Image (cartoon, rainbow, N blue to C red; front, top):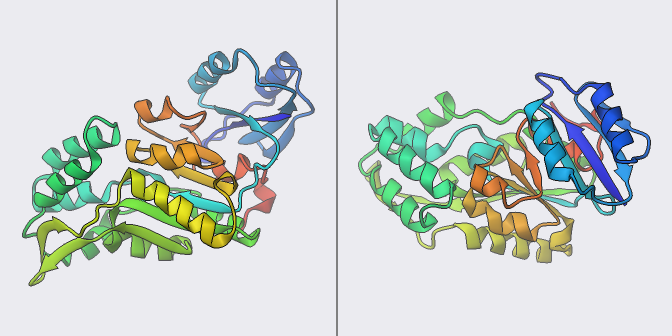
Length: 292
């Protein structure tokens, strides 16, 4: 059996019962269950519909996300999450670059790297090099004034942990940011790159080895082995090309507001919902949510 989930952004609820019922009837599904009024609903089907992606396109035009996945095992024991443009709304290195006066150049490189057009490690080293001489205390300024958490993040982590789950933040960004974000959102651990500094200023270098695509895959493998679970028990979420390895290996890999070239390689795509979408996809209702 498979489960069909329809969802939209809780901030702009627009999921209509008529649309849910029309699709359920067209696909011969079971009774619809509402996970949150006007926001998320689901129903079972016996097989993956042949017109799945055509309907997905139609739903996207309505501001609704559509996911079809196996019913069995969809509640996961672990969350493995990217940070930049996933758990937070910004790219930290871009924000630092703005402070350093090289924002436009760095943002261009970031966009190309996240779209898979550039080698991640080389692109990271080039961008970090442009930050040379930036005072270290600017990091605290950026954290305080520029970084915002993506809506639903605290509920996602608190709810999964309340149900026995584990949460790990794994970022191609920097520990100077993941330390704060992981603590604020409730992650159990975090991994990222380290910016090097000397005499209170950034040196323009990051410590080796660079954490990129393969390191995220390694994190998934190492943490699951330590916890005594398998990659099938993991819900991974990210938006960039360097996330594709872990998204592919995880039992459920979610492309969240992802670059088009990344989303095209993932079956689970969330373009409208916030991070609570990852709870709806596991079958949690809004009544089950923990945290705020």
